[in-house]
Amino acid sequence: MNNQDKAKWCERGQEDEQAFLAIAADYRLYLVEHPNKAGDIYETDYQLANGLMDVDLKHVTTPFFKAGNYGYDPDYTVTFNHKDYIRYRYKYPEWGNDMAILFWVEWDAQTRFDVNVADITGVWSLRLGHFDEMVRRGKLSCHSYLHRTGESGTNAKHSWLVDLRGCTQHEKIL
Image (cartoon, rainbow, N blue to C red; front, side, top):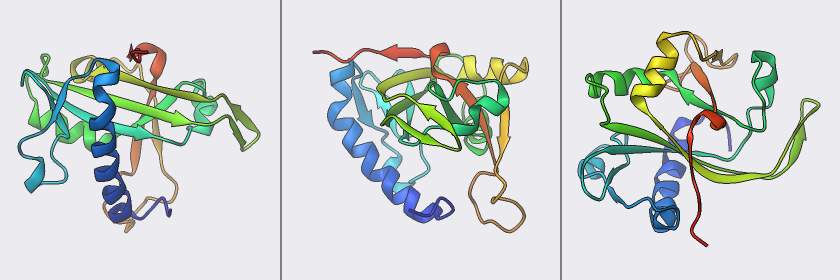
């Protein structure tokens, strides 16, 4: 799939959201579709079943091979679009414990750009308040996409690099 085709990625994202909802309880995550999601594909994906927190899913199936250029380990690095960060920042101005990002990571061991990455599968979460604090303190690096400049459409032009080892890992129930 073309990395710049946002419409196709949004369509795939909706499929991924339904697939993850079917397995979320396997990770002790009790989620329901966000009540406003049906009318807005950009709405936060889920809420905890008790309604106390919104949760957005990021399904990551490709490693960020160039993470080493920023001092990160490609085996554990995922990206989070700056555009989403700004949208969430306005939606959740108090930051508290209102929202979390879930990184559902699934990729095979592979090599690209002379970089080897290990096989990884799992689910990690990061609260928005913690993410915001890391950005504000300069603890995260930001990557600019070379092919997403000027008139490249609505795709995010920048993404923050996140080390999964600084997130909460959710163990799968056997």
